[in-house]
Image 1: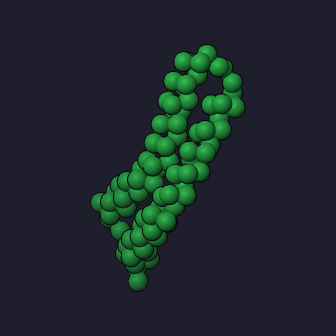
Image 2: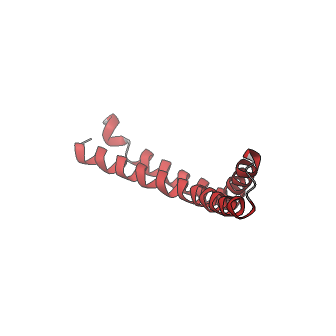
Image 3: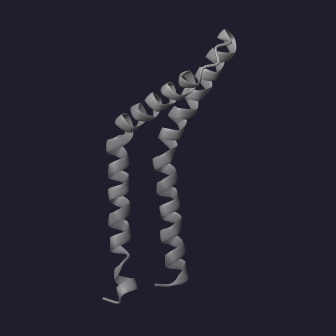
Length: 90
């Protein structure tokens, strides 16, 4: 396996990680901004008010995007396994 092959697999791994993390992070970000705006308007400073909606948003994102995330991870693993023969020499 050449250095270029290693770089290609690493680049592909980073792109897959970014694609998998993006929906969950966006849902958490949007929930956090909405809760912050709500707290600023009502002047309620409660820790659980910031934590629970973000947690629910992340769980919702995982429920919505879970099958797609699993398919993406599976296709990446197939890609990695298909590029293994040059490493083992077989």
